[in-house]
Amino acid sequence: MITTHVLDTSRGGPAAGVEVILEVRQANGWSPIGRGSTDANGRLTTLMGVRPVSTGTYRLTFMTAAYHRDHGISHPFFPDVKVSFTIVDAASHYHVPLLLSPFGYSTYRGT
Image (cartoon, rainbow, N blue to C red; front, side, top):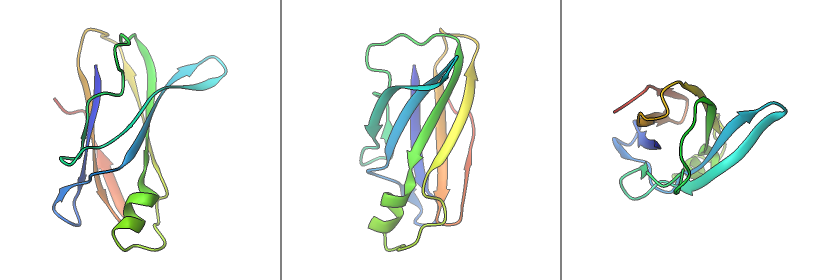
């Protein structure tokens, strides 16, 4: 399972409505395999649907420009945030949170 959570550190709360795209690396580039938007709590748990996770390299793209514009930032510095990660144990849960502000972000492997 691959899930995410977006927290807006400048506002001190969840970032609702952030569109997220999940891709897997293939020999010829990236292939999209999931998409959704964060809920009112900033969480997105349905990226994989019923598809099983396999080992490989994945990428989450957070479409942050629209979120920032919706919150009064007319020219967001980061139009999107791309986070790549490798799955070596397909049976594990991979939770990849994003801490977001208008001029910076960080991420980590959560639980």
